[in-house]
Image (tube, rainbow over all chains, first blue to last red):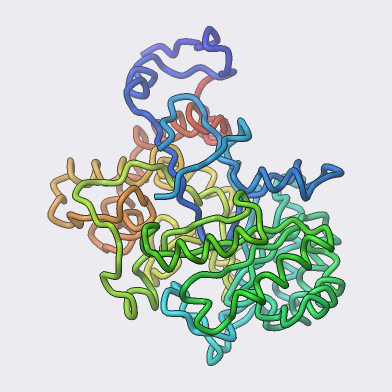
Length: 72
Length: 354
């Protein structure tokens, strides 16, 4: 199947085939509040900020909500 | 399940930007929930020279893609000499350095400040405390460690494990933490019934439900290196699995780090887990006629125990190995990684999307 551009969605530089997009349309990604004990996700860009301590307090709760995501 | 109070960013944790290093299995305490069975009688710890070599490889990988090294254990502060050597080397290599600790070393506020002054490479600290740790390490030490971190300008969080977020003892600890620690800094993890937890907590107080938990994998972005050189895709319950499985990425004593991580970049099972969670794999297992191999009940809304159940079953692992070699599944995984996580690497490596 031909791979169709999805530039109309404004986020994808690569082409994703329409049949795959159709599959993903009903395949929501669920992000839970589960943390893995031990390793904390830390954004290194935030670490480099002058007020890293304050900024990181927010990063500790950093969970992104990308396209197709349900947040529980 | 813990709810997430805020969503402060638009990025997913990128693959392999953060790495973990298991410094040691030694710990002052042998908590009943510890999945790696750490304790005072364990001997295994990293060899400093070898760990520094691994860190050199991290710093060189893809021109600096790896940016954070999280030092964990066991108790990384158990051997301060090793912690200084490894953490200092990582810092000198340009990595941000974090550490996980039980806070035992903070006998007083002043003592804690002194210890931290000797660890100038630390960019953040995660302090573990919960019902299990507190049997041996009182909350006062956690308070000392946390307030010393605040004074020293070291960002910190407090990690709390529990079997059940409705447990009154867990709730009491969280409330006590809030007396000296902002709520945002207190993170909860559901302890998985593996390792020592399987032996000592048993069925525990988990909220078990029928059906497959839906959440995506929360930890497969950050591989972890163990003292014997093994590289595992995450720090979750799967680290308790001795046998081969798709999340056992390789061994640094056999292969260079770049080779292991480049192979992991196109690991279809790993990235499908990250994009859509272990439920997606479990549904494939069912479709393949292996439903009888799956557990029927899981911890409510907790994906890691389902993942562990898949990766610790040799018959399911054999199926997943075959699935990982299937070109169509690999293609779907690459697209899912791009679509949900905005990571094009796997598509590029597989020549898709042009």
